[in-house]
Image (cartoon, rainbow, N blue to C red; front, side):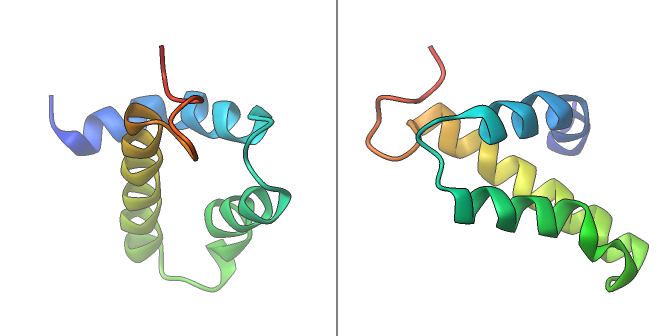
Length: 75
């Protein structure tokens, strides 16, 4: 399985986890929502797909490493 396939499959889970994370700032949540949802009219679809994958891989890495101070990472 490639990183792209993994990111695509984990997208709803990672987004939901981040948006419900009490440690995540409201500004970060708004930014993520803007990148993944409202930018569809501003960015060409192939670029948007790559951007989403990049954001999701970064989110995955952050949770694996421990978001913020290391206490909110995946268990």
